[in-house]
Amino acid sequence: MKKYRSDSSRRGVIISALYLLLLSAQISHAKLSIISPKATSNLLSQAVPRGGGWAKAKVLTANQHPTTATTSSSSSSAVTEGLKNTLASGLAAACSKTILAPFDTLKTVQQHVAGGKSLGLMEATRKVVSRPGGIINLYAGLGVAALGSMPSVGLYFGVYSYCKKTIGETLQITFGSKRSDIEQSAVCSDRTLQTLTIMTSAAIGNTVASFSRVPYEVVKQSLQTGQYSSTLQAMSNMWKDGGMRSFFPLGGVSIQMVRDIPYAIFTLLSYEFIKENWVLKRTQEDPSKRWLYDMVAGATAGGIGSYLTNPMDVIKTRLQTTGGASDYGGSIMKCAAVVLEEGGPAAFLRGSVPRLIHKIPANGFFFVFYEFFRRVLHVE
Image (cartoon, rainbow, N blue to C red; front, side):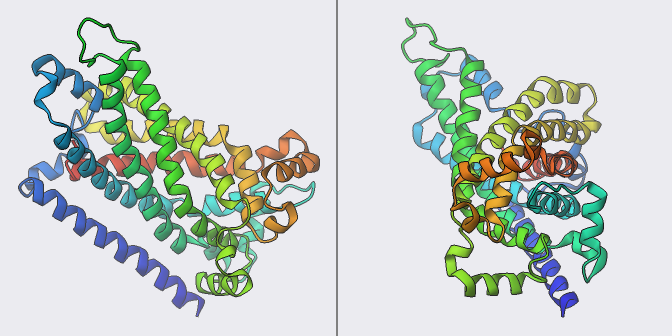
């Protein structure tokens, strides 16, 4: 029965991925002609991606009058790019989640341990594989994680892309180099406005996505800590025990946002900076290694964001696993105080090693797939 359910989860992930691939192909074909085999083979080695919104905006400003583009066309373009980024990021999330699921499981098991005791990486591994099912337990919750991450990550990057395009344009027109009154100089530099745009867009995108992310995080972590043997059993038992509240535990949404919003800001600021100042320059020198540069940029950015937000991740795991809501009353501060009392400041770094081992390559793979699918979809 367990094997059947596991096969069903994997088939569900594959079917969903194929469906999104077909849908993305239709969107791409609706805008441009079918990609030739030669063009397809060169997708991973294109020198400059069909993006670079800020650089592109400067080129247009130099050659065109700002009023040539209407507000409606700009809004329509932002919506289209947002939808395409939704598809690209959803597919990329499913790919990266599948590749690195074992490290996510070990991280959750380490953080779930209460009291002053902490588990080492090997000890956590032995604890997981000693359960019925053996090494397959390292992939516990993969089906719900992959299927759950596709809409949440897709929504996150879709909203992020839309806000980045619209907010960035508005800030440049109001405070930057595109001010309509030519007698007034720019209030802020375009670089400062770009940073502010990325931070604001990342915060908005993650705020929206956090509400859709909590239920699958709760189910996934319940499976990873061995509380249930299958996704179906977890969902049915949780529903019987507490109804909808089981999937949205006290403090679950708030701590999800407290962790994810700073993580998104740190990660995307780092990635956009590395991409603009290193990836694009190196790609012009050697286009064939674009995938490698994307991977290094994503891995570095993910490592920075993960390490800086690990304390929030420890608290999130405590609040979202069984007993967390009742033990701490859904209070983030109370949970943080208990963790501090148990193991001092070092307790907030529990699970940081497997989290970094998971997040660094996960972000590397994610951004490789993300940039690839963006090129497939001809994201402007």
